[in-house]
Length: 114
Image 1 (spheres, one colour):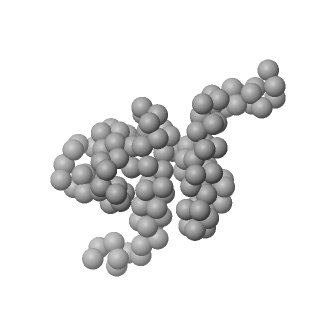
Image 2 (cartoon, rainbow, N blue to C red):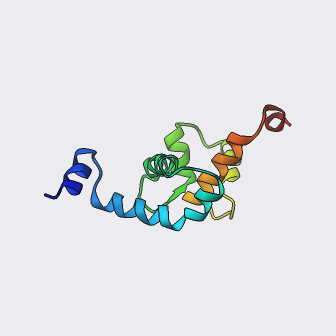
Image 3 (spheres, rainbow, N blue to C red):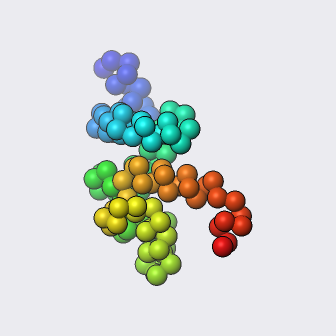
């Protein structure tokens, strides 16, 4: 085994995950740059997104979202999901996830409660 393959195995990461990460980092590089995220920050967000995306489709369904958060499917939960689902497709891709998270994390307290 080469050192890169061995390193990936030691970290519990398979070749498919590495390829998907590289693809997503390239695909969403404009968004990552526009939000001022470092590659390390983007990588950590992608790793989290990948955990929530149980079926590996590259998108998070409302079921995956709610299952991961261990919350019931309520009107409030559906609304929280829809804040991320910018295109209304019923699934969140990595761009929607990162932009939605960035928007939420950059609100100040008065903006959140109004």
